[in-house]
Image (cartoon, rainbow over all chains, first blue to last red; front, side):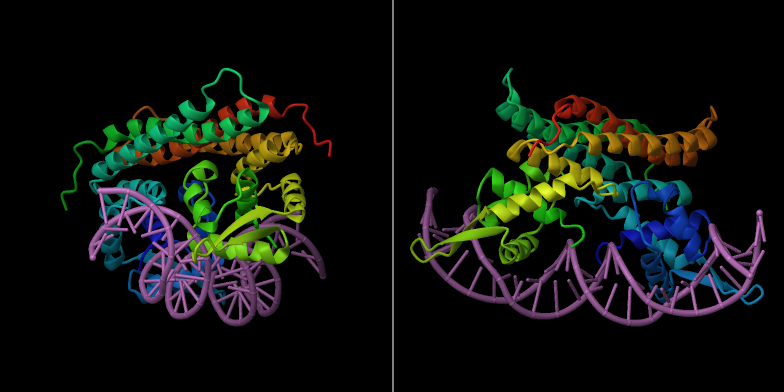
Length: 183
Length: 183
DNA sequence: TCACTCATGTAAGTTGTTACATGATTCC
DNA sequence: GGAATCATGTAACAACTTACATGAGTGA
């Protein structure tokens, strides 16, 4: 029990709409899966495990003779999702978790994500500062060689990613402000 | 022989500077590893494999009694790096590969990356259009519920990432223009 | 001498990928 | 009747993570 992120992403997706494994695999290409990708094998496996854990259950429809399991989230699954969403993830995958948590907040109500977003902002500001330091040290000269320009372009990708995250996060902060968890 | 990306990232790093596995692991937090992360176990394993393949070799220094293997790239390793850099990767990890390829271009000369960057731009433009479609369909109303605003924020992350990549790519294009591979 | 960094590795367990395998339903 | 889509799964392999394990050199 460590990462668990795919399971939680699936829980959010199933809360939004009870579905078959197949539909989840399709849906994962869109909605929640702007950033997440999961193969159907992975999804079926995780679905099986979550059913064993009592987080979800399936109504097995045998329409005609075709087997079809429509999964939905049980109370234990909701509880687990809330627990996960409220335990901070400051790892390198924390940003992706945060996006899933935002969708979780949308579907099951205020989870008190403001603090985690603030910490994320601080981390990205710190990382940006590191990149800026490298930029000043290695690429502030007015005439760079071609090789240096290419290296600078790679660094600039890092800088732009950090700035872009910060810009987004600043937009999101007001949406979470003074919406601490009450449950 | 499929992904191979970590190996190639290590080749680039070793071309830039012959190093021990330990130093590479450190360095990976910075320079090439703005986007790449690799644990030291992973690095030692890949180093061992590349040495078996004859791509790299180590001078084993026994200064005093401390064992220390400084790896450097052999001709076969250079050849492999060029081959990889010139075979397009249009997968979901293609963007990261492209960044490594830029550094490869910086260290071993023109690799003809312009076409791959152009295809990358087209892919991101197409993806952006898909997101814009969802935006128009689901979030164009002037008054969104709080839940919808959160869902929109998640979508906006996707949109901003695509726009940001495109902005960066447009900056990089001139650096690659009319520098087709000659070797 | 004690803590920290440098340095390399093994082992176990978990995840993720690729290939294989099957069969019903729907639409042309 | 045939192709595409819906639908679920197994098996083998590859990759990655976490924990364990060791030991020399450096500086306070």
